[in-house]
Amino acid sequence: MFFSGAPSVMSENKVQRSMADVEIVPDVIPIAPEIMLQVEFPSGVKAELGNELTPTQVKDQPTIRWDADPDSFYTLCMTDPDCPSRTESQAREFHHWLVGNIPGSDISHGETLTAFVGSGPPLSTGIHRYTILVYKQPSKLMFNEERINNRTAIRRELFSTNKFALKYNLGTPIAGNFYQAQYDDYVPTVHKQLGIVIDTMLKKLRN
Image (cartoon, rainbow, N blue to C red; front, side):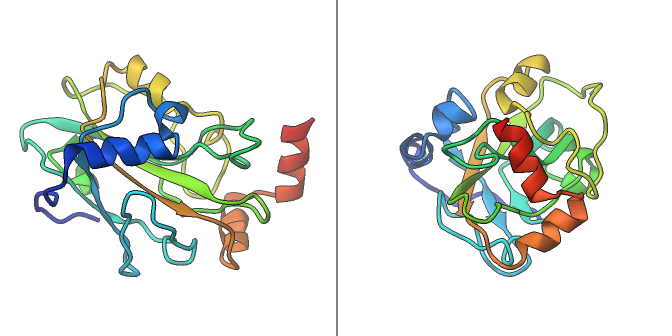
């Protein structure tokens, strides 16, 4: 989903400070962006630099806005570093959405590498930090990643946003935001959609 418009004015330091406070830096990226990405879900809720939302509220693909150059290409990534939990993050990161070659800020015309799925933090794993970042590409790119649809968890885990950015010479993200979420009664629906048997996954990760 897409609509045009510049992000709201915000102190550059607030985005960086918020990401540092919850250790998105360094858990996801080494350097935080200066600009707040605008993230609004169809339910009406917005990501606000770490506010807590529910998986029910964020189950559908959000609208993303940033101040884009219409003649440039961008990459969007949404990821959870707390897989299966923040204290046991053996599967860090589990990425929820990855789109490259976005012309300007028109995500609908970008190249979907990993289809969007909503947040699915397992029961009793506490708060998860869902991080959304945008990178400005040096040019239109040839991505050699295997495409991932929205019906599987395979190849979503053990992702590294930073390694992906280094691989494609994306540099530092130009804008970002994050929200936090923990289990609610919608999560089993997400797990069923992705074919996750959570007890089996947790046992595998802990062995």
